[in-house]
Length: 560
Ligand code: ADP
Ligand code: MG
Ligand code: ZN
Image (cartoon, rainbow, N blue to C red; front, top):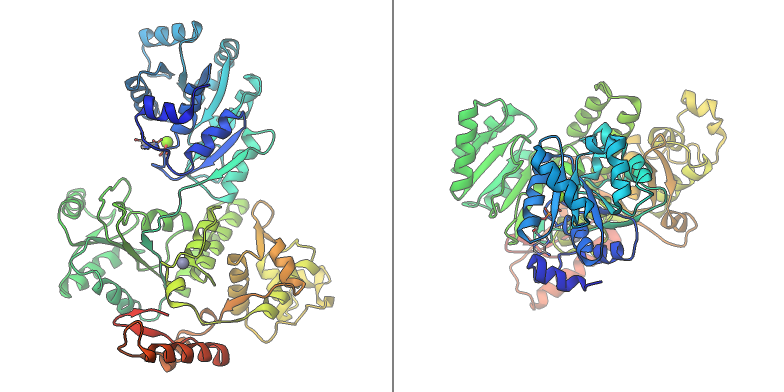
């Protein structure tokens, strides 16, 4: 076997592996089945191409689009590698060339559409020729939760069996837990090695704020970015037009973009944004797919995005050049309520609705995260990191309180009901509400019944989302959205560990403003000024004794 680094250099001409690639390549070379989740552009193809070249034999690559196959085959041939494809667009010559190369063992990477492989003859023929590795690209297509479900992809588990249970690597950029579970169930007999990489974009500053005066919040943010290129996402066509108008009046060069505009106007605005500097694009989510402008310096959401995946995609359009970029997402109860009613009123199946509700919960949990926002975001994609120092929560801190008792109430309600129930039922038990279900299951007799009557249901929902974001509980997506305890949850329930929760998100906006305003300290000091030390001490005392944070502000930036 040739050294992977040597091949990377000699064949592909790359000087180093990108994050995650080397580990995956080594796992494949060690004969393991692999599921790799990495964002678009991270370099997934290399993870099966390089191992193919490091050993003998044929790799069969399943790819959903003929255009994708063509690009890949052309690129491989450019590197001097024997590659070909089986698809409906091939002419007879091409088919003959591919057939010959497979028969005499020259072919190294064969791309095929799942439709082709659904054909038993084709797979039997391939089984005889001998396939060494099955690579399934865009593997989220096997999942009914993915946005791009394809029935032929569901057959690929069968294809794998027909090929003699061949070693398999599945690759996708769509990362969430439900989709992953589905991929594993359908493609693998045993759990594959899971690799999740490359979701972190450390140059993006993350911030989310509850809407108080959303226009003022947005303008304060944009004011820091005068003359820079950026995108503001709005939830409706109307609001893009209105906001673009008021920004123009405030002296910005702002343009609207939404699917309701005439094709020509839309294309014109997009071109201006791409070609000129300092344009603010005020857009619906229709804007951005395939936009590759490296120096977008900020992305703001004037309203809650659709999901964490959408959020990540949308903020990901900033800072492609690797330089610092800023993001701000505003969210309100009204957004959340709207989103909930959209889910309930949709035509989706009950199962689909459950998944959608849980995805929304995860998004709201990100908004109210009690600790580093990037940690919470990456945890959703299955990646872990240290606190980042580049998000609002790391920089400004949060108003927090010792929430151990609250967490224990929630955890104990979950345990006492056998880890079999969802959010609303648990909260009814805590506030002591005798719903039909509570009566039917005899849950009014539980010790936890009514122990949370001192708080509103809204507060409990937030607290539950917070302990979810903090990793004390997990959601069983496939099973009615029931909550279960993690090891950390058990430790908190037993009193072995405590937990800080946020109090600011439990307050009404007015209360929150009053508390913040009352304790902000403004001073013009430098880093080593003794006054700063005094202010820091004051801040600590306020936080400890009064349970409210104070900030020391350097010019316009909160520091501690
Ligand atoms: P994905 O499938 O994850 O979206 P690709 O496999 O298409 O990504 O790779 C994206 C681009 O990155 C390709 O142009 C590829 O040649 C390039 N690339 C992959 N690995 C490396 C590397 N180690 N060094 C430099 N470029 C790389
Ligand atoms: Mg790809
Ligand atoms: Zn952080």
